[in-house]
Amino acid sequence: MRSTFAGATLLGSALLVGSFLGAAPVPARADRPAPENIRTGPPRATITMRATPVSSGLVRGCATADALAGETDGVREALRRWADENAAQPSGGTIRIAFHVITSDGVGDVTEGQIADQIGELNQSFAGTGYRFELATVDRTENPSWFKMAPGTGREKQAKQALAIDPAHRLNLYTCAPGPGVLGWAQYPWSAPESHFSHGVVLDYTTLPGGAAPFDPGRTAIREVGHYLGLVHPDEASSADITAGQQERIQAVVPVYRPSLFSEPVARAAAQSEITPGAGAEPEDGRVLAYRGAFPNPFRVETAIRFTLPASAEVSLRIYSVTGQLARTLVEAQLPPGDHSAMFRAGELPSGAYFAVLKVGRVQMSRTLLLVR
Image 1 (tube, one colour):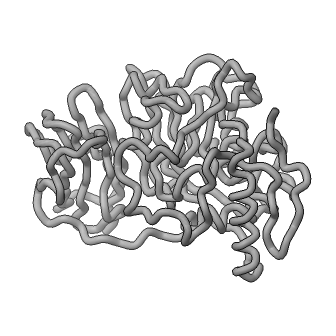
Image 2 (cartoon, helix red, strand yellow):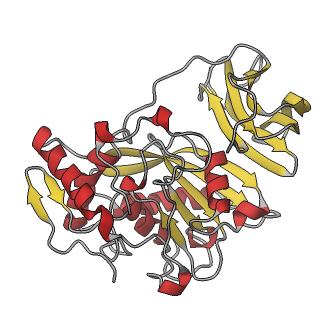
């Protein structure tokens, strides 16, 4: 039986929801584990990346997990406690999207235009809710295994661990080809601490505007983003605009379970050396290949590009202009396992966008850099 929002009532400024996801409640705010308690590696036993099996019957290709009864009371109590402790505040803000395009031999390489159109569809459907969406970054990764990832699998875990960018402050959106019967899925806000890599939305690349999937390309993302913000089956966002009731439910959930979504991360100092292993560069259990990207970004003079190797590997890190011209070769060497940082100094390069392409073995990933003068 699918869970619903039937019987939801208002208490103070929060909506107490009748049914939510999960086997073990994730408490609100201060009761949740701090980000430093979440290890980089396989999730703890209580943090599961679940999804509805195809055989159980999908909602128009949606593989987001049905809500389980075990977490209903925990989420309801978290919302009640938050309403008791916080006065009503205006809700809304800009959700910044980290867009991850995963391909296989070039298949699935959606265009910048499709990405822009998809964000336009989101803004149109969420118009009037106080929420809007804007593109923060785009990266493209050639990995045939991740391209075929399915919900709740090791492939999904590996891809998200490697590609996720600041999940507490960004909506990480992945495109791939998950297979027949699945058009997309999302992680509910309460499924893990807000900084956990598992958060985000995964879409079949053909569901973007201009794609070939059925069910109105561009609308699948609206449904899955609704799940990401707290809507559950069957009260999910559909091809219609977000309703007043759905808006209230989202506004009740987001301040409790995604409190950092509209704030900027605290800046950290960039590394100073050309290529250095980070602290604790020795191998760790559960460590996976991860491309952390550049900080700061945008940048004026220099920026540090960070990545993690699970094992010793031949690594290439190169900077290209938007026209495909090689601008810098930062790394071309065999590197040990661990965390690494390479400094990109712009020198006399002109302002504009550049691509930092990291190649480790057969895996190639890219990040967009923005040089401003």
